[in-house]
Length: 114
Image 1 (tube, rainbow, N blue to C red):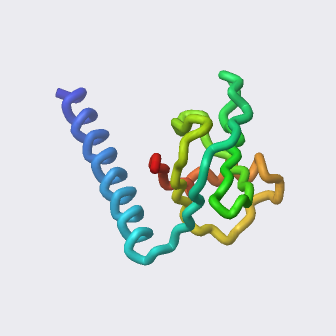
Image 2 (image 1 turned 180 degrees about the vertical axis):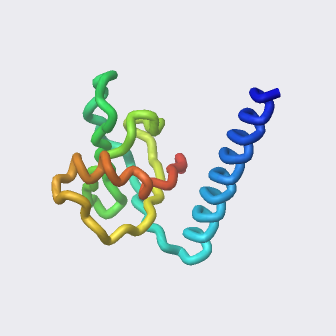
Image 3 (image 1 turned 90 degrees about the vertical axis):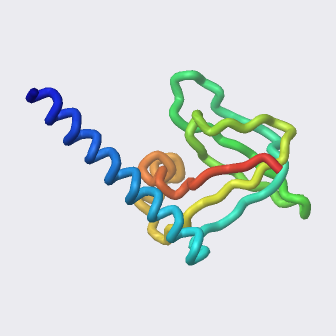
């Protein structure tokens, strides 16, 4: 019986966390507090299986290059066009790009192939 209460408690906690996360994403979309990076993926660095982040180079139609530091679990292929969504966050944590990207991983909202 004690295991049942623990299971119900943790299920409830996960449900609440999921609801809050969903609410925050919808609020971000509603208020348009996000940035979009769109373009052709021209390179992927950091395919090391032990690394947490990969550097993804994106070229937009105007020829501007962007470098994105994203989690290695983000699925992108070189040579395909993607749209990346990021929450707007004004604060810098440390000032070192890789450390900031590692600590501030909540700003990446998702991506889609176009």
